[in-house]
Length: 80
Image (cartoon, rainbow, N blue to C red; front, side, top):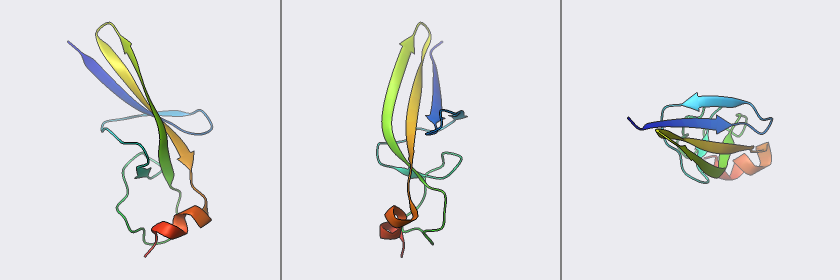
């Protein structure tokens, strides 16, 4: 049996296991769920997927999605 584990890695180093795959430059919320664009406001906690790594081992792999926190000014270009 081959097991794929997916984790998001916050800028502070904390990890959270997620169930779904993400892509580079995708915007996600605090729990790692993709956000629909345009955003309703720039006053949100939003992360961007900046790097993806895969660690392969016998019987599976771990995919790590590294997050980058966006500032309010960066979010303004994604707001209606």
